[in-house]
Length: 114
Length: 110
Image 1 (tube, rainbow over the protein chains, first blue to last red):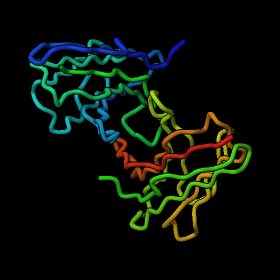
Image 2: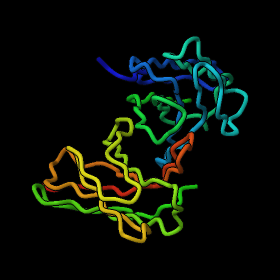
Image 3: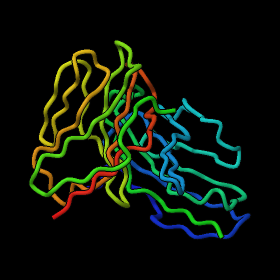
Image 4: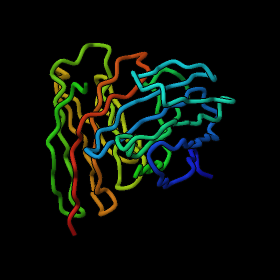
């Protein structure tokens, strides 16, 4: 069983569209994250949630709206997509907010905006 | 921003030990050193972490200098599947996020 699964794996869409990426973890973890890896391969945190509550929002544009219906899911909705949103988005989870524990990452969603 | 410094790239022969250095000269007493790696087209994967003492697990060994200003990740018998980008990360106890630097691109050659 995949610990952290994201769908879709690939997403190609036009500028101005709205799209969602889904993430689910079956590890029973309390904390989930979204990271973005840009074309230069830098990984940066976007959001973190703990028990469905937003903890970290790293100055991400309002067009990005995470939603956590329960602690096993953290979906990422993006409105009015722009070319600069093209990147690989990784979902992750950890047992608690303390990142000293091991974080598990999904396989990533490669978003291409054309 | 990441506070660690790593070489941009390294090569190692298959079957040999791969030693990846990391400088963290400004590390404070309650900051841990964590290592993750990212194999091509996959998400990052946890390897090992330590505070002061050397650590070993089934994947690797972590050697931390006595002054804690640098460390070395050792993959004892590198295989082709160890080709990846390796990230050395300082994490303060209680921190809520991982801050990735550029990492070291390790290539294992047959």
